[in-house]
Length: 589
Image 1 (cartoon, one colour):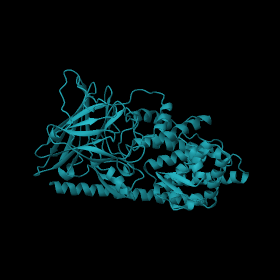
Image 2: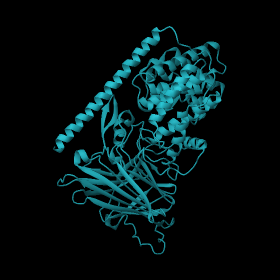
Image 3: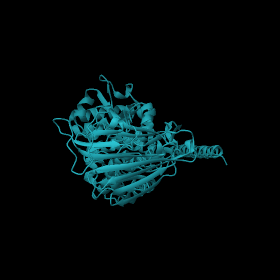
Image 4: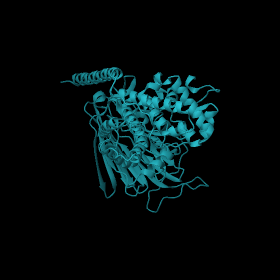
């Protein structure tokens, strides 16, 4: 059978799978609507809350100075700022969709809570009262399950701010609103809520069942549902089905207070919650570079150092990071001060692939507290075009064939998901006298190009060198196959060409100097972009090695630490005795 016939059958199989998934979602949605009608008509069994028993702790960092900005009418969310000139922000035109989601999620209440002033309390209560009285929860963005779940958790967590000094009328109105919101989220869970949003909704309604009175029956049902969903979405090695490190941070920031709330109420936390936290904590350490930032894989952007410090305080084990996350598809190599992390897994599918990247076999590399090789990261609040470009293979430190991505993206239910990509990813590793050796391969280019990419890495035991080899195995033999091996540099790394363009010197802020070469091939320095800087996106550079995968199916490359730069002259300190001499930079860029 020809490859065209096989491709057609595979495409038909994928379309059938997508159609079946759509039918299943429609069935769940219809079921949820029917349940909602029955609940409205059935006069028995509903037990509305009359008291708020407990307020969960919010672990997210608060800045009391933001309370003054909000009082003055400046609302800064999701990288955008809106001035309302004294009007309610809910009537203003939002500067972005992400800004509107943050506004209707009410996470900003923590800043007013941190201020702990009479003005902050009155301002918070006025905004919440305006939202409730004008039924703004009926808006399209406010109704989104993820936004509604965040709003429910925020209102419960910061209820002391809202209720202190409030009259009985506001107290009862607030309780009715929270109870109604929990009911709507419970109803949404009967429908087609998928992915991490489903987990967020379950966490939110479980919070409500603990914090409100008369909810014991619902709480017991939710404990089982939440445990089952955690067992499903959190893999045995602690990773999430989406393979997104950022989601682990967000889930832990909610699950840790949930565990505390159970214990404060004298209720044993569900086993699924305890096991989920226990698995996620060590997995999160796998992604940490020497500077504390997390590797930029599959939706991870800027690492919040304050939140990482908060989570570290809850990390009881604090053992060494795991080195091989087989289920999640990540590997970590270490050699003294040097760290290498590799994306070694197939991309997720379905609702879990909304933020996934086409970065199979991409790696990041750091020496001490300085990152050398990175991926571009992600911009959650940028334009749709920028977000999609950041998910492409070219935005990662790996090999790109024929200027294509190793995974394909398509719009499903209004979201850009991965609809095809590597399915056979193989990984092996071993410790050798020379250091840690790793090899992986993926078939993401097999269907379109008949190619399999294999990458081998060797991190020296002393961390002073990282050797790599990229091999393209072809099942068909085209005349040529354009290939580019990309190595994106951290913005603080300064490159300069040497050896007439066949090598590069990399100068680091910590005075280290590294050399790069690629088996005699020409190396070019090109523009790149770094989307995970604390101050927003930054211009950076990348090393590119272009080759023909037919004529040259295998290339070798190497990063070597050769010494430190003398601060005064800018010339290079000689390498240790016995090391190979290195040439002076030519100044070419």
